[in-house]
Image (cartoon, rainbow, N blue to C red; front, side, top):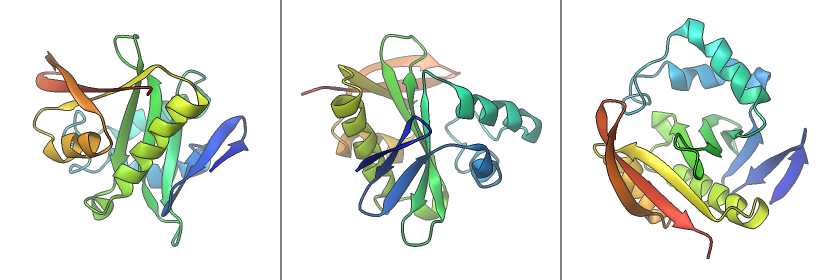
Length: 169
C-alpha cells in the first residue's frame, strides 16, 4: 500500500509501516546511530553532535527517501531504510539499519522487498543497487533473499565491499 505524506510515500508491509523520516523521529532513530552492533559494518558509532546535521539532511533532501520502519502492532521502532543515489551516481541504492532486537525475524526482508517494489513500480527505476561489507553475512543473505545478485567486489571505506544489484523485470 502506498499513501502520500508531505509529498513522500507511506509504505506498508504485513507487519510494518514505513513513514517518511521527520524531526519527531530524532530521539528514537538516534538509537541506531549510537548502537555499536548496528554500526559495526557502517563505519562505527556516530558522534552525537553529528546527528542533528545527518537527521536534518534526511528530512530535507529531495533526491533521497528515508523511511522510519515501525512495527504495526506496537508502533515500536524497527529501523530506517533509505533509497537514494549511490556514491558513484549511476543508480539508486537501497540501505537500511535495524535495531538488533528485530534481526533475524524477516522485518528487514519485508522492508527491502517493499522498497524495491516502490523503486521499480512507482519510481520506474531501471536498476537498484545495495552495497555492504563482504564480512556482513546477515545483510548479504537478506539482499540475496530479496532477489538481488552480487555484481561486483571492491575496496571502499577501508574494507572489502560487495555490490548487489536488481534490474526492473
